[in-house]
Length: 215
Image (cartoon, rainbow, N blue to C red; front, side, top):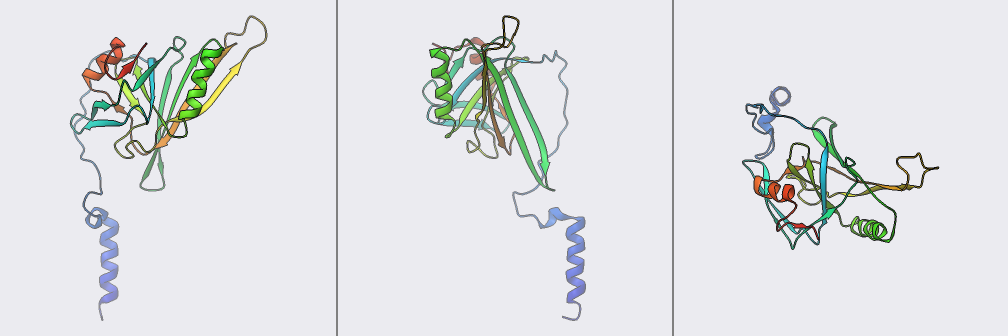
């Protein structure tokens, strides 16, 4: 044990310089690769949103290469939401937590109108589904559909929930936001939202297919 202290000190030094040598199998960094930019238009905004819950969308099949959803199990699991034009917005923001953790916050905002019995029924369904969790399909301005509320790290364990609902009549006739219901869905998770593959995205673009309920 004469040299025990030196050995321990050397191991600590090696661990600080080469920490990956002491990580268990399966823990570490993903393999980096070349990123090749696609020469095409990049259009902002989002135009379409469909929502579902855990009782409707029961499973998601995710391919490793390319990284996308190839199948969704359930009976017409995603329901159409008719939103006010240009009111759909999806924000995905990530931030480091401590030295090695990463937290991602998703927020989906959209507006509906007018306030009446039908919109109340829809809002109540969001309130009822929120405790168990909500998933959303968002079609972005580039024509790519994404599933928000599912990721490869947490799976379906950190879905979206109703974050905020706001309805104001406004004062007088000149208030553009008067009698518009503003809705926010959000979550905090550990993985990125996942794109749908070309086949499922085509269903969303067309507004028809086995994963969608449109009427």
